[in-house]
Image (tube, rainbow, N blue to C red; front, top):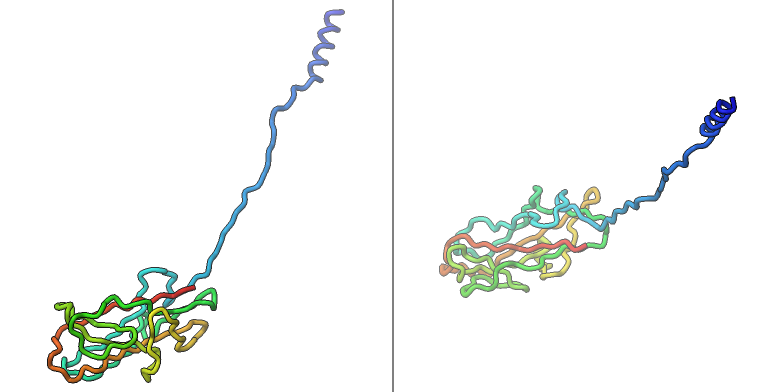
Length: 188
C-alpha cells in the first residue's frame, strides 16, 4: 500500500508541475512615409518630358512675301496651352530655339534671333520673332516668363504669336519647307 500511495503522490505531484513556456511575443512598428513635391498638369497631362505645347504654323505663302503672322495652334485644340500647378509660384518660358543663324537669312531677326531653316538647304533661313500679344508689342525673350493670356476654371492659358517681317518681296528666297523647334519649360 505504501507503494500505491507513493505512486499516487508522485502522479498527483507530476500533474501539478507544469513545464515552463518558451514562446515570446515581440512587437514594434513600421514607419510609412510619402513625400509629395509640387506638380503641374500641362494640357491636362502630368507628363514632365516630351510635352507637345502646340504648333506655330506660318502656313503656305509665295516666297515673295513681305510680312507673315500666325498664332499658336494648341496641342489640346484652340490657340493656347493650359497649365494648372499645385503652386502659384511657377513660370512658363521659352528657353531657346534649335536653329542658329544660317548663312543666308531673309527677314529681320528679333531679339533673340530665331530662324526657320530650309529643310533641304540648311544655309537658307527666314528670321522670325515670338510675341505674347496679338498686337506684336511684347517680344518673348529666352528664359523670361511668358504672361498668362487667361485663366479658366483654375487653368492658366498661354499663347504665342509669331511674326516674320522684312521679307522685302524678295525673289532670292529659296522655296521649300522651313522649320525650327521652340523649346518651352515650365519651372516650378
